[in-house]
Amino acid sequence: MAYSVRFASNSAEDIETLVRLRLEFSDANNGPHPESYELRKSCLKDYFERHINVDCFCPIVEVGQTAVAMGALMIYEKPASPSFPNGLVGDVLSVWTEPEYRHKGYARLIMEMIILKAREQGLMSLGLAATPMGRPLYESLGFEPKASENVEMRLRLK
Image (cartoon, rainbow, N blue to C red; front, side, top):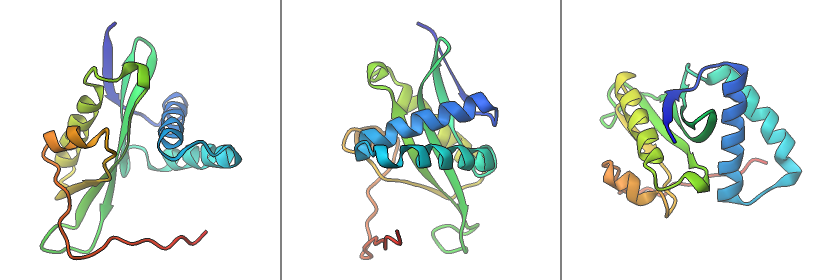
């Protein structure tokens, strides 16, 4: 069956698609959390409405009329440093292909579109957190594990 790929717009239909695919990605990688499903759904809708095609760019692959894969490029401006002299960096999130559509090259296509958009936007680097399944794809595209003496840490505030 024929497929198409495009960047999501801020239409209600595209926002709904992004929310659905992001929730599928999240539940597959973190386990289902039904107690927070409605809150996550509402917050994602609000997020995409405010950020899509501003500092968040999301390629979508459609087979027929059905969206089956997505990814997200998040753009940030940080204080300039030797690693990113113009301060523009990006993170790749939510690269997801529905299980029945995997191994058809859709994730690679999503990533190629994200990399092109990142270059177009003047980003100096892209980061991502690779799952074991996605790591070979990312490495084939030139991503490398981050070598640093620093340890990435987080404090959960809630």
